[in-house]
Amino acid sequence: MISLEAPFDIDEFSQLLGQTQVQVTVPRDSLAEVLRRVCDFMGFGIYVYTIRVRPGPEELLKTFIVELQRVDFSAPDREWAPFQDRGKADSPFGPTGSR
Image 1 (cartoon, helix red, strand yellow):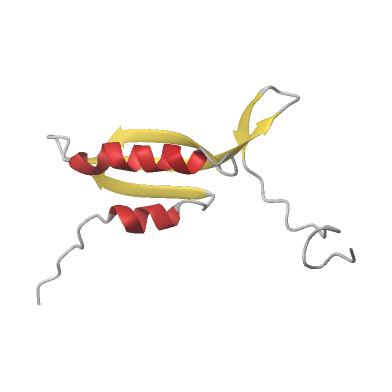
Image 2: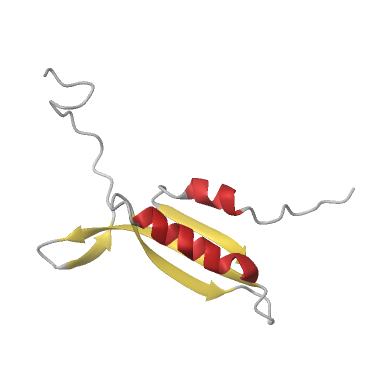
């Protein structure tokens, strides 16, 4: 039996955006498109990520490891801090509100 690794799919990667943490191995020729899509996604202002890119385990730089960590801006500290999920809150404007 032969096991083949599926090729990297940029559209499948894009579906991961919105998660708190993402780590993917990206072929060198797809790295620019991955970073462009992350920046476009962050352009909406709802999700912001720190981005870490490091070389993959090959000597010839065939792949890169891209790590995304969701962050929020801390106004008192005037810096980006790791995102902390605080659960859902009932809002009078949401579907469970009374207004």
